[in-house]
Length: 558
Image (cartoon, rainbow, N blue to C red; front, side, top):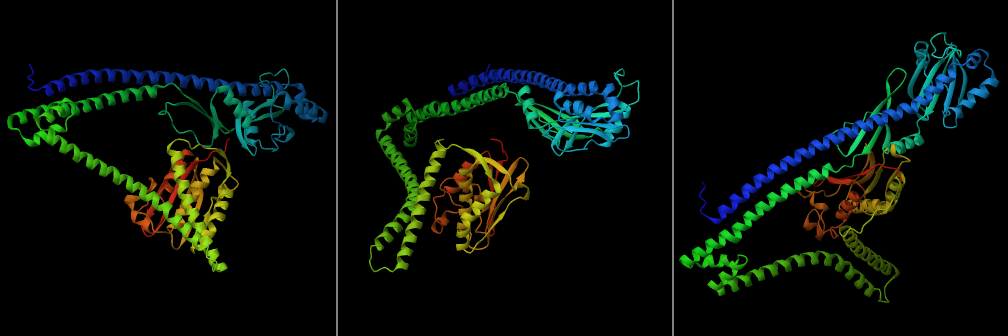
């Protein structure tokens, strides 16, 4: 028999027993969920695989049947001998529409093309490899894939025999016929609609995604006449059963239980055990320290402490109220001081030089100088207000994206033209380094937010660089475009590189004495990059400069 001397120990024991029972229940539910998820996922994967297999076989079967029917024909045998133009025009060219293929060619037994026709989709000629023709001498039928100038094509071929030789095994071939169908975007779209999935062609096999139960995926090798893989067709379909959500809910449930258990034990100790112990000590020794501690307790214990010593309660409450007021005032002052400085400084410049413009004795050169200062101060204040509005819209969830196609090279040119005068004014050399393989390419993104991202990064680069080079550009990185802005400025300390993306933060608070800014630019930049589906990071070394990298998904489809 367990002997428990205190109420607190009994409470902990009861909670421990409840926790063990709960964990057994949770473990059973969790493993049952894993088992169900695997069974359903495996069944869906197998069903999807069979569906894709049947669809591809059915698609190829129509062309294989057409090749077979067309090549056991006395008329086709006669054509290989006579090479009649009339027969060619009536049958070969007409077969393009009849068989719904894009290219037909006929070889004689000496491997010379004697007939060739195509739809408008295929302009290439004589692209069937000789190895495919030679293979028909032995096998009489073949089906394979090729990469042509127009794209990926499926080829069905058969040797030519008389009508009575239906299976092409009684007579020697009179020639060879190839039917070609282009697997273009329209074909891929049709497959996507039929299978309710995403269809892609890839040069490399799809990476193993068996661990990702959010999709079911089938990848098929497409081979040439020599059985070498020329491409892969990949079908992927969302797997929307919410087993992952169920597991998350179970995990959240168990974490919530233990968190609640810990919180309960902590507060039971604070609200029950410690106040009772204090009351016992106060009754035994009338200790003033115990009276003060009791005043900080919750509920009825606080009232009991008031009965022991009302004076201690009043003094403690006044001290706590004073400390809280001072802390609140300091936080408010720090916030307002940062913003007020960025608004008041340019406002003083505007008002001061506007007043000087009233002086009638100013020369034209002085007036232009004062006007220029007013314009700069106005722009600085407008930038601060704009940054405050932008960060407010971001945090309130009112910022939205408007996607359009942006020419990558043209955008770099516009940014160069915009910031070249500012760089020249500080004696800095501005460079653009665009990736050669991105010329003429378009990026699907929000142009305005992309402009804001580059504007913030280039403004910072110019602001914190006194001499040297500022470089920006882009590069392809898999399915992403990686942009960069590099400078030779003051750099950022290693331990402060993460905090530069926080609000109202510069790499060093002392910099605010030398560089203007509310510290919102990089926070806005990070928020916009993430809204566009990307990430941003910085590499820097104090005294040598900084490089900001951000990547965006390379997607040109609207």
